[in-house]
Structures are given as structure tokens and as C-alpha cells.
Amino acid sequence: MKNLIIIFVLCLGLSGQAQKKDRHEQIKALRVPFLTEELNLTPAEAEKFWPIYNTYDCKMVDLRSRERALFEEKFFESGSKKNLTEKEANKLMAEYNDIQRSKYEIESQLMTDLTQKLPASKMVFLPEAEHKFGRKLWEEYKKRKGKD
Image (cartoon, rainbow, N blue to C red; front, side, top):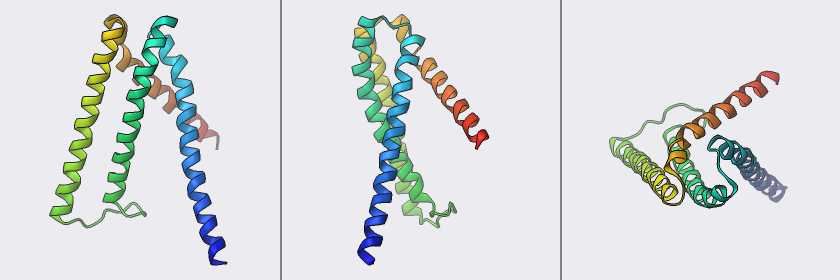
């Protein structure tokens, strides 16, 4: 019986990971045509853009995952704040600052890499296009939540 419970818990965990991965893949599938259209990329430009952007996206997913884990470390599962020592709090702050610095460096490198292969006159609109995509996802999420 104990083994059955362990297997069940492991399956739930793997199922949750698979759902997160599926959700990320669905978002990527929506992002490709959206950004391609927003940036007005030609097929030749898109061929250069997406490998660079996908590498960037993988790095950002990893950083966001680290950030979420850091956030979870600050709170109990119930959502209440943990009592942290100054040493623990300083360690968390240093890790948070490191993640933010890494995000900035990755975003800067993305723009440098893209403008070496694609027109800056199109790439300058990437941050705005990403923001628009995020808003569109959020609005869709709110609509779906409202129907439940």
C-alpha cells in the first residue's frame, strides 16, 4: 500500500511537470506567428530570428524557474512569510540580484545577436511586441477564468 501511494505521488509530480512543459510549448506555438507578424519578418529573416530567439527563451525560462524557486523559498506552502534570519535573507537577496543581472545580460545579448543578423529597424520593436504578446495571453487567461 505504501509503495502504491509513493508511485501515485510520483505520477502526480511528473504529470504536473508534463503539463507545465505542454503549456510552455503551447505558448511558444502562439508566440511564433504573433512575433513574426508583429515584427513583419520575411521568411528569410524568420529563419535567422527564431534560432537566436529560442536560445534566449530557453535561458529565460531557466532564470524564471530559479526566480520562482527563490520566491517559494521565502514562503511556506500556505503562502505565509517565513521567519528568515538576516543571513538567510541576505543570501536570498544576493541570489535575486544575480538572477536580475543575468536577465539583463541575456536580454542585452539577445538584442546584440539579433541586430548583427537582422535589421535593427525591426528588432527595436521586439520588446514592445513581446509585451503585447504577454498582454494578449493575460487577457485570454482572464477570459477563460471568467468562464469557469
